[in-house]
Length: 160
Figure 1 (spheres, one colour):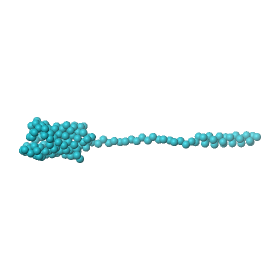
Figure 2 (spheres, helix red, strand yellow; figure 1 turned 30 degrees about the horizontal axis):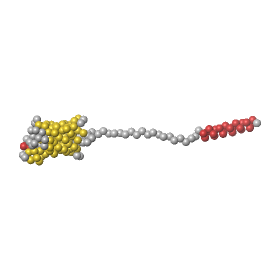
Figure 3 (cartoon, one colour; figure 1 turned 180 degrees about the horizontal axis):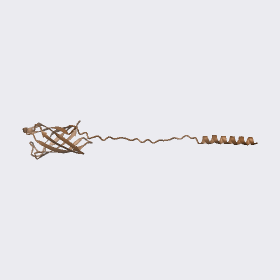
Figure 4 (cartoon, one colour; figure 1 turned 135 degrees about the horizontal axis):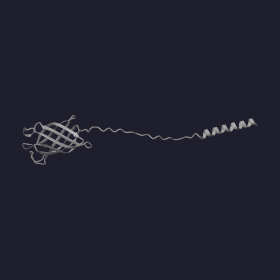
């Protein structure tokens, strides 16, 4: 009888072990969250390149005040630039003037100074200017050029 009791206890223990091991196993779906980290590089403004637009003469310049002419800047890396503009001279609105100078950019504030190379009438002169730089739409707006006490306005858009 003792053998039977011992066998029964062993059999019951074995059955409990099997049942408990089977009931503790279940299929689980584990969902892992993945965090994606983006790196955004903020580059220096792309101000170097060719800019085209117009300038409008004020009083004190040859030609009627308020007349607009072609104007272009070629802005080079390192602070140098040159410009080309059409203007009024000797009865013609197609006189082309060139200038070389330097530029700076501080935030959105663009500034330059230059000396004309072949100004109308053969007199070269120094001039300074400022404009607001917009890197989103690649524009120089609200531009003002001052020379010999005269003022012109300009706006340019980057074309390459």
